[in-house]
Image (tube, rainbow, N blue to C red; front, side, top):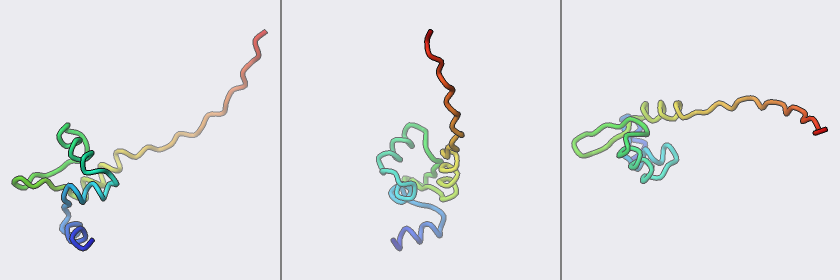
Length: 79
């Protein structure tokens, strides 16, 4: 989308664009904002915008590194 590309160059995305960037529904992003969770955002008058840097930082904070699986210990049979 050409409009989104221009906003990405400017460094700020609309709620719709930010949701698409993160692969989320707009409703989810709006709910998180109202609840005070989710990525940082900016208000420009009534307009809500998300910076690419804040979205990338949020995505990094959400990253989970898998732990190595522990070997199962042999269960001893009941005597």
